[in-house]
Length: 452
Ligand code: DOR
Ligand code: ZN
Image (tube, rainbow, N blue to C red; front, top):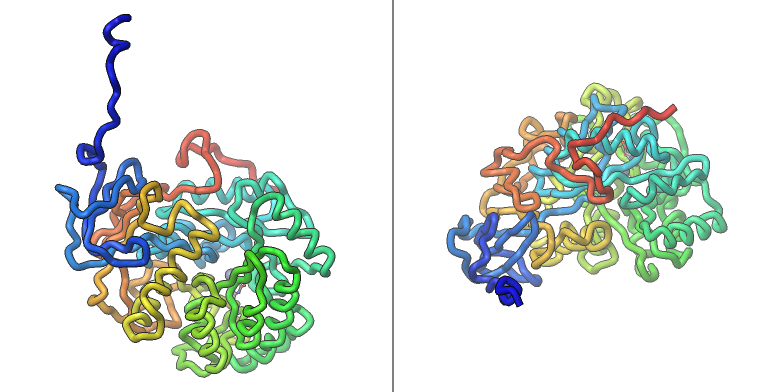
């Protein structure tokens, strides 16, 4: 036998593995903060150890997995005066979000493959964090090719900014849910029942709430739960709906937004139109019920429903489009709520980070060997006041102005530090679409043809 065939291959012992990057601090592993170090190879967590020599040490700071935000509207293409994929994902990164799912109510409305291809191209050049592009449905057309490259399907049961309403009777709903189960894609519902929504002129938040009463959400949520099929209910807002969530069946999940947790129709707004959103802000009683449901597990996760509009559009309440920006402030606000004792730290990590990842993007969401090395370095002592001037959305305003927040100091995306001491050091196009494989790499797309 030639001698080179006799060579024995020994797997390298872990101690001699050369990591691309290693960091240490108080790391969140298996539900606990422990002093330790994380070794990263090829963008993945390769080792979790007591110590790694040469690791960048973050001392007393805590290190959490990056957050997945399952519900944002980045407005690109079509409404880039409100936001685009660069400003939206920058805002996400500064808020500790390393993966976002973008909603289809852009222009053209995304329900067919050519529109998806166009958005894929745009996002591939601009995104600074990872993402998935959610598909919608119009005229009951489902485009299989688009769905395959998409993390989920979004169904709007009621009219809202730029959304195409999908009216489905019970039979159609069953048919759709069965079909989507075969595709293996979750269906996300904007759960408000058209029957109870009125379009009367509104001059303030109380009137807006009157147009979209609790009953509208209750009715839609009741229908969805009684379908008995796995599905996801976006932005739950009412006492009645969280009561119904007690009866949900296997695979039925729900989310709540920070604006419904921190604001009500009676909050003090610099401009009341900043609180105009669908489903609407409700009463204190509803807000308290949402916190209870978030604590006891009826609500599974927090999404920002980041829906920016320009300041000019929000000038007059009556004509203002509904929607609130929030991808950058969600985690920072909740961390302060933890400090105030509103939510346990472990539960906060579940609802902000672990649960959205498990539901929509399992390669992220925990500090575990094999997962993406998306990591947030957070100093819980550094509380700052939210000031729209320092946020990164094009909106330029926030209804959370002046509220306390804890922003991550540093953020890693697949092992690369993209925020260092509050400064961006990533690059455009670094974010990847996790639901497609780009043949020529994520920057090598050819220009797609525009639909229509
Ligand atoms: O208030 C809202 N704004 N609710 C939605 O469902 C859509 C969103 C938007 O895109 O502006
Ligand atoms: Zn939305």
